[in-house]
Length: 364
Ligand SMILES: Cc1ncc(COP(=O)(O)O)c(C=O)c1O
Image 1 (cartoon, rainbow, N blue to C red):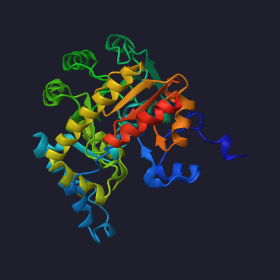
Image 2 (cartoon, rainbow, N blue to C red; image 1 turned 180 degrees about the horizontal axis):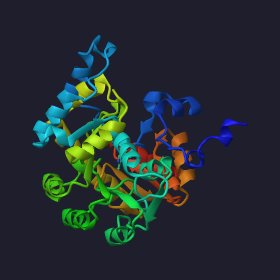
Image 3 (cartoon, rainbow, N blue to C red; image 1 turned 30 degrees about the vertical axis):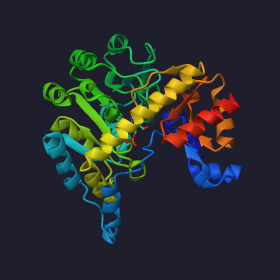
Image 4 (cartoon, rainbow, N blue to C red; image 1 turned 45 degrees about the vertical axis):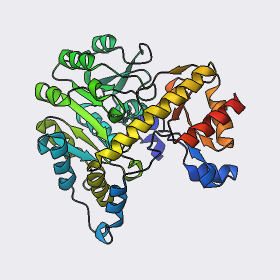
C-alpha cells in the first residue's frame, strides 16, 4: 500500500499553480545581478507600497512575537469606515486567493459545479477542483466574459459563479450595468463571486456600485486585495464583502490567524494613504498607454486593458518568455490559460517598460 493509492484522485489531478518567476531564482539560474532584473510577471505595484505602510511595518518591533488578532479588527474597522460598510459584512483574509478557496470549500463538493469564463484567473478552477467539484469554463466573448452564456451554463449542480472585472489575464472589463443585470439573474442559491482585484485601476465612473449590489443580493461576495495597487503582495492580505451570514460561513472555514500582524498593520496604513493609490493608478494608466502605443506602432497585437498589465501576441509565448528571462526581463507565460501564442506583461516603471520594449524587439 502506498500513499499514492490513498491520495484523493481530484487532488493528485490538480495542476500546480505556476507563479511569476521570483527575481532571486532568475538571478541564480542566469547569473544576473538581482538588481538588474526587471520583474513584470505578477501585476505587482512597481512603486512598492505607501511610505506610511513601510513605516507601520518598521514600527512593529516585537509585536510579531504575539499571534495576530484573528478577526483583524483594526483593519476591518478601518475598511468599514473607508467603504462606509457594516464591519459584519467584511472578512479579512490572507489575500483574495484565500477567499476564493474558502468560497469553493463552503459551497462546493463532488457532484456540484462552478461556472467561470475561459481565460479568467486560473485559481478559480484550481480551487473548484481542489474540493472535487467541476469547473465549467464558458468560452470567452471578445476576450472577456460572455455573461449570457455563463448564465445559461448555470444548472442545478452549479452553486458558485466567478466573474472578474477587470479580468486577469486579458484585462477586459464588464460594464456596471452588465454586472448588475447578471447578478440579478443568477438564482439566489448560487453564490456570485465578483473579483475586483484590479478595481482601483479602472475609471471611477465605470466601477460597479458595490454598496447597492450588496444591499440587493445576499448571494454576492466581492473580492478586493492589497496585493495590487496597494503594493502589499508579499504580505498577503485582501478582503471579502458580503452578507453577514455569508461572511460567517467563510469565517468558520478560515485558518485562525491567517492574516499576519505585519499584514494587518501595513494594510491599515496603506488604506489611509489614498493619495498614493491615486498616483499609482494614474501612473499605470500613462505607462500602459505608452506601452500599448508602442506595441501598436510595431504592429504587435494586444488586448486593450483596464488593469496594470497587458496581454500581447508574440507567436511562440513560451519561447519569447524564455528569451526575455535570459535577458533579465521576467514576464508571464500564459500557455496554461490556453494562450500559447501570448505573454502577459505587467506595467512597470518607465525605465522597466523601456527595457521590456527594447528586449522584446531583440527577441521577436
Ligand atoms: C483576478 C485576480 N484575483 C485574485 C488574485 C489574487 O490576489 P491575492 O491573493 O494576492 O489577493 C489575483 C492575483 O493575481 C488576480 O489576478
